Length: 365
Image (cartoon, rainbow, N blue to C red):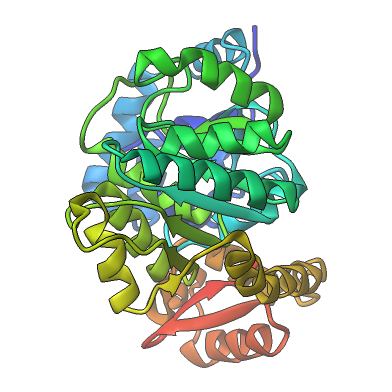
């Protein structure tokens, strides 16, 4: 029997409606651990400030979810799960505004994946588009970058294949459960990717393809990457959703220009008009991403130094999820606003937190 432990409770809470990264961190603060929160009395859940629908969701999840059984199921699939509290959790993905609490992985993640480029585009790619995607992915992978894409028809497949041909790493982000390859004809490619990189998803095993899942998948594609390259995309395209997510996450956006007669590439031209970096070869990408690599290294080095003050550590832990308003911190911590603001100022000076909006803060590591 697999014991119910803290990591298993992260998996359990990731299935609860209304609980995301920030609320999970708040529960840790309230109860000392997610295990304690999962086992807490209904009265204690109601008294800790949770919305009523969240309390009901937790109580329902306790009845419906066999946590140990879900952990065993993942293991049977030759996969594993990584929680936001684990050191293995991808550094770049941790920085986005709404990181998944849990990701399922088949294959292996690596620290080398901090040097990652997402390559996306239309499923209905032209021959020139597929050749461009494969060539650029091969060249970037040979320079030591991981290529991230979504295992879809067209540009995605060429991106993964190009990385594999360069004997490089590639990550496929799924919009399904880790046990469901979509489209099915990419099963062999998925196996190859798992051997030399990883398949990653935030969706529980057994989750089938669903249109509403793919925008969520796209934010992870960009979240795992320093930048997103759009090779060929029409003006209404999922690839442009990924590019938008990248811009919102502060990641670089690149685009390959298209002929005026190529309707499949008009979205790329629009991106360039809006400020995306025009790409003619791999060097255009590598030169732009070099400073970003240094920033990541610097932030990781700063993050290696944990806050020394216990209260600063509490504030810092709460910020390692969704951005939080100062008022939320005050309510959660039960202290004066001046004390919270002082701690935030110190964390900012140490490079461990930043302001992301009016009175809103998030952790940098």
